[in-house]
Image (cartoon, rainbow, N blue to C red):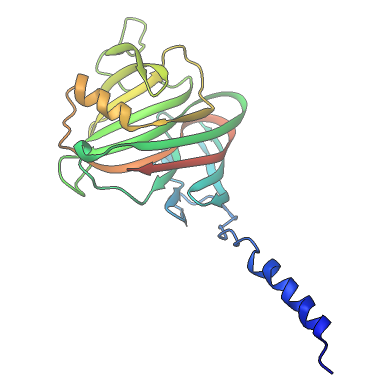
Length: 256
């Protein structure tokens, strides 16, 4: 027999069912170690990019997606490289949306990054935002703009080096995006490379700022053309040697 009291109880439960929070998107939580492995997550792609591994005597770089909450992503990069010259890997997260605009038409490239790193012994590496531009939409990269939020014994590319072999900045104590930087300029043979390193050498483990401010500084002071097009926005660990575990707990970037 139908019971009015049971019906009332069921009605009372409905709002709790409707109000249940949406499920967060599933992420590929497996560890990946392939030289060119790619894992898509929301608006991002995690690239292992071990482009210089042939130059190492031994080692590997492995990465795992750990979280995806809206436009905020987390990942871990475990790497160990021994011997050989030059960069072995640049495990990074690449932005897949908002790319292709002319620099003059970009209002902001808002980025936040919370990270930590546990090292074993001495390492040579940097942790950096990496932005590329081209003179044509979708064309080959012509300019690389790096913002190093940490440096572990690595040297930025430069046209000029001092008697001690250290790169010479083209500008010092430049205030951009809430921090003070030294700027280095050189070429890697394929692109003009602009590298911003903190003037005091301190790591920035909690970054929140507008990457477009670095672009605007270069167009106003270093001859970068505002007619260039944005082709790439990525961030990660560029490694030459040593062993470490890098953990990015919360990373987000958007082009506006």
